[in-house]
Amino acid sequence: MHIRPVIWLLFLSLFLLCFVPAAAQTDITLETLSVDLLPEYDDPDMLVIEKFRLPPDSTLPVDMTFRLPAVARVNAIAYEQNGGLFYVPSARLSIEDGLQIATFRVEYPLEYRIEYYMPLERSGSTRKFTYQWTGDYALKRLAVNLTLPPDATKIFTTPALAGKAYTLSGEFPALSAGQTFTLAIQYQRASNAVQTYKQPVEPAQPLNSNPVWTEQMLAFWPWILGVVGITLIVGGGLYYWFAGRGKKAEPRKRYAVDKATIHCHQCGQRAQPGDRFCRTCGTRLRQKE
Image (cartoon, rainbow, N blue to C red; front, side):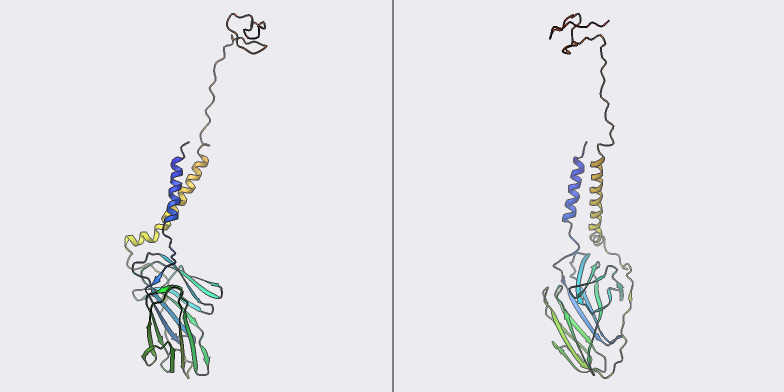
């Protein structure tokens, strides 16, 4: 039974499965994180839009996880292409340790975003809100854009944002993984009317420009190797299990028996032609008629 080639194939498949780069990475650094804060725009609460890009040399696809406040109302997890927004089909939400966990796969070198609503603290005409980046990933660049209703007055932010009227912005130093960023906002407004702001998000569609061949292979190579490895393991196991079962046992060779041969009925020793007594025990042989 020749099973040595099968064993080598099994070892090879296991090696490939163990050493193929995993999609998930723990040392991801965001090239940019741009946070848009829009209070009382199309909703009485604060609309938070976190937009990010990965470095150009990032290996894709990559699985990412963001921690959001448990009270956040997630509106969309999407990517932007050619001026349109497309839902990320792999996006999932769960609750862990009092936080809302958003997980999804980044497959293209594009800008991705997470949109969610957070409650505004109201006391008469005063509105307060605190935004916090939880430090899920290191950042090379952090930018914050605050767009208030046009009738907002007595605007204060900590740290301070610069700008004119009701549109403020600021850029902040790079952050390491685990390092948080907090922005406190306060303003006054007599009206409760909401403004109109919403960029439609469409269902995920194929990109207009096909990725180059290498990007396609990087995206599907782990899955291809996984399928090949599982196929080899299952096929090798079945071959090993059934290898000896399909062969029919060779029948034992039968030799013709000389009926004229005489054996001693006392000790079983074979007699020579013409013997009358056993040469071993001396017993008189019984002659066949």
